Amino acid sequence: MPRVIDTDERNRRVTEAAWRVLVREGIPALSVRKVAAEAGLPPSSLRYTFPTQASLRIRAYDLVVERLADRVASIAPGADWARAVLLELLPLDESRRLEMEITVVLGTAAMADGALRATHRTAHQAVRDLCERVVRALEVTPECVRVETERLHAMVDGLALHMIRQGESEGTDWAVGVVDTHLANLERSSSPQAPPPPPALGERPRPVENGRPEKGRNLRRPGSGCGRPGD
Image (tube, rainbow, N blue to C red; front, side, top):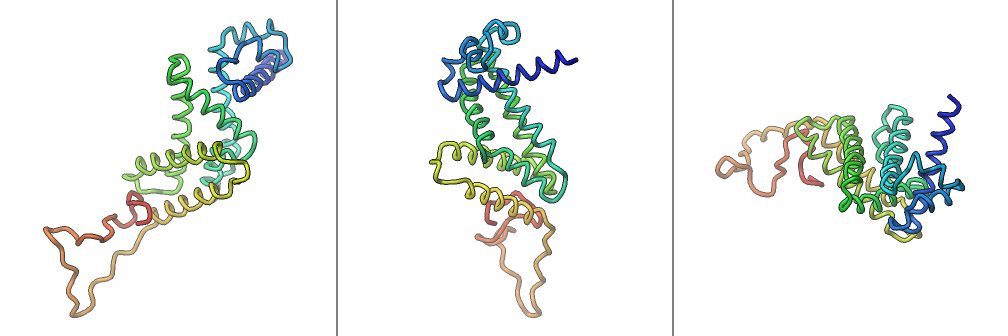
């Protein structure tokens, strides 16, 4: 048993060394020899577990997903669960920033690497699944779950990418604010809304044209989260 634990720890150490090489020098520099040197290990100790550059790339990507899953699993259920999950998807500290940089590097490489493409799809789906869990936790109407999931997924991906490209002085508070605003909008749209009051005595109803409400009115059904942002 201790030998298995030591192997797991060594593999994690090697994978994190691969991350550093990837971010510092790029995909072409990711060799077993260079990663072994970064991890402070002899190359011969890696050749069985990571015999090729491809196996190193796949393992480096897998670790991003595993670490995200571990963090999400540790979040206590409650009113702030959805917000906490989304913040774990953003590069708000050095560790998560490194994960996002690895995701960008390997995600780009996966476009031309069939072996890495399946791992990229798994990582992409893991984030989408978390977004769907958040949407469902906010009790968005069932018919709107898919579109709100896609909207949230696109927003989170866009925020994360923007954050690793911005200058260091710009901070991260703005991104947290965007998440909070989006969550507030989702919560409002999922709350039951009272129907409009009937017209007052002697007041004529608003005219309709061809059975449709007049232009410019909010066409979203009460309680629906599928309207345009700001509706």
